[in-house]
Length: 218
Image (cartoon, rainbow, N blue to C red):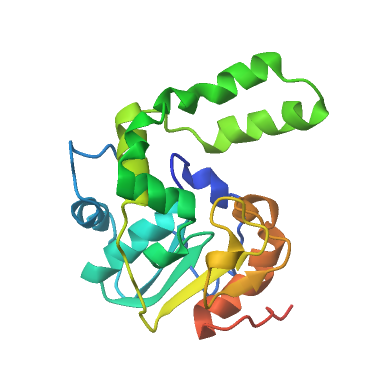
């Protein structure tokens, strides 16, 4: 499950041994008005057709797969660049959820990449804006409002034994200092599923099979 507003292309460079794994990609659907995350999770579960699966979620998708897991029998649950309890959310998000400040955030900023592309100065921005446009393709404001609201108000507190948390120590959205009990990716940022895909191709097979960071043998 990709992150907020993202499409499955974020996994395009993830390569798992085909003799061991078969990958299936989930996508965001537009939520109903005031739909609870747990109800949304059950609607997404309808797209899952296999038993004894490994369910992986990135960022806000990590919150969703934890809700989905309440209604599934899983072999393993893996979250990447995400959180597994409200206490792991940064203070600004917890504050926004508890005060209702989130209502003041302009979701029209969703279209910021359009304007940045027109006025970008320097090679750094010019090279990265097309990446944002490629991976962040969901621009429905109803979805964005719903997703942000459910993220900052999430009250999950999952301590399931089959939950594996992979997190970068340079994550700028969910700071590493708030994260407990994870597999650490040194230098990994919030978008490491895209720009650190070689790490995942090396270690994810072992994590899926054993729950530990075992290097894949060539």
